[in-house]
Length: 405
Image (cartoon, rainbow, N blue to C red):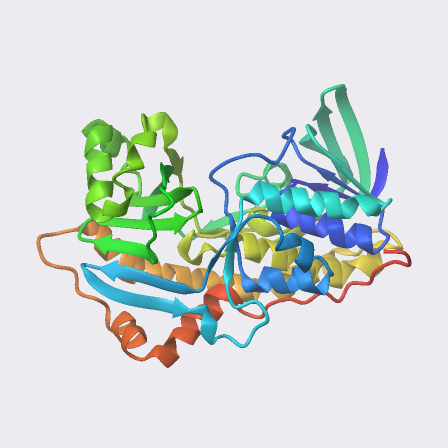
């Protein structure tokens, strides 16, 4: 198979870039190693920046008909003290809310919407296993399919295969590790129709938890100190669930759905980024270029922004073959500042709030001054809301739509 662009990975970055390039009339294939998109414990927060992109593509009406929940105010308990972290209602944006939607619904929607583009092909159950090279240039990938191996030659290969990127590893691109003080235990608890609560985050000495109301269940993220999962398991499931219910009594009736540690997913938190996103014929974007902390839930939206910027910068050039490495590097030059700023803010939250909370101690937690100010002065709640909802320098769709698209 020979295509103009081969995208490795059918996550938010890969599917959005595939859609945008197909829309521009570029011959593109997206490789997804799984048979479907149905995998739990993936980011499912769609922020206003992404909703705006969907609007610019003319997809928003159908998208918002999919089942989802909306979050506008982010409230929490900090050592028992109520705090308000952000109020998205203060934003002057068309969609002032975060939509909670299973990621597989988002990806399936993009795949179905992209079927009208003859130049876009999505190959499921197709896993890229190695790079094809011509000298120093990446010329495509070798992939494993249900029918055997296939070589896919491409003028440009784009790695969208996540923080454990095979493409990045085969290319030998160096990763700068920034680090994180925590990991996350991700699980579901049942929710009764009459159970409602607007609390988003709870922080106590030695413990932290985030809960999302997902309609018929609670999605829960229990934060633990980095590398302490085995110690948590050694204490036993009952001890963990007792801690969870003490922090969030509303989960008492539904916590019985967590029957063993098999119902709990360990998410190893990492913050890192590539110093170089390109080689001749190759570009890395999304988590393959920069893994984000779950702080702010911005990972999906950073990946979408990368895809939009990539299409804006490269779609016209791809019509004539592979852009030069300097032209490919324009994506990094465009996106590196937002990535670094977002990661810097995540590190500030990790080091000044999360690390101290997880260290515990006998002393009551003190609400940080900045959190007290944001809670006391409502007009300040628009600042973190903007950083979370829109990010640093949000992207807008400028790539062309081919005639008939």
